[in-house]
Amino acid sequence: MNVIMRRMSEFSPAELTDLWNEGFKGYSVPITMSMDMLLKRSADQGLSLAHSIVGCVDGVPVGFVMNGLRMNEGVKTAWNGGTGIIPDYRGKGIGKLLIKASLELYKAEGAEAALLEALSDNKPAISLYERMGYEVIDELFFYECTSLNDEALAGGSGEYEFRRGIPQDIQRLYVPVNNQPWQTQWESVVNGESLIAFDPEGRPAGYALYKRGFDNQGAHTSTSLFQCKILGEQSENALTLMKGLLSEVLGPSSRGLTLRTVNIPGTETMLTSVLKEAGFGISVSQVHMKRSV
Image (tube, rainbow, N blue to C red; front, side, top):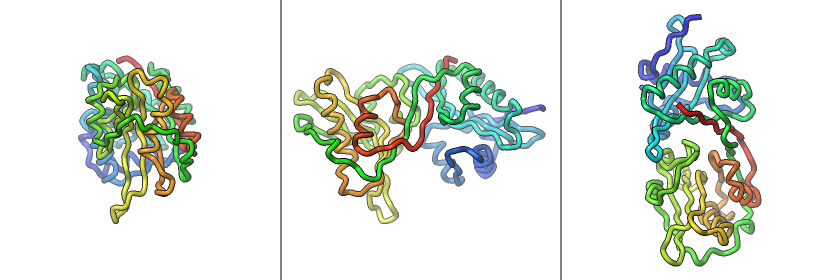
């Protein structure tokens, strides 16, 4: 089978939407998108159609990898924001060819590291990525909560001053990116908000990055949490401060909001523990994978 690699920028938005939806048909988590949704996702999350790969057989697009490139602390990093193959062409080695072409593109663009996520139950995809040099570096969880336990976030944090702002304010804290999932980095949280806690000396002590959802009448209906971290020498007060940040962002329960989190790393054990105590349950589990380019 002769597979020709082309760039996504060579196809119309309608063609790409059809390919996306066919490529993810039958997945355990439904991710069907309209054309507007797909274009918005590409723009919001820093995906580049010019750097994304489409595999074609006899001129027909049968699979793809959507790619993004971003500088993280002086390191150019690539992200695989979605790999899909239409059902009739799965299991024929096309996925390997798509990943190989993407890795070659990353190298040509000067990337030094590559990230991706895969659903934890998608063993064939994880196996493919491992064969292509990726390693699992963490587990990632989407949590949901419909009944917030206010008491789990109580404890008082009166010594801290909370200031609300925009995602770009996180950049000014010079927090190491490390292996922060791409979708939860501040650049990806378009129209999001930040909450920064300052100690009595005016030093940043912790922050949360989140996004509110609104209905057609402008009423606040949901909140999605992307990051919640403690900074500096806050070990003694870390748990209290984290609860204070989460209470400010998510509570109180009387607001009746739908509450979610996005790609919370499993290694952030204090955060995941507090979320579970507050009534959050896992809705989606992924693995976070990385390789050098």
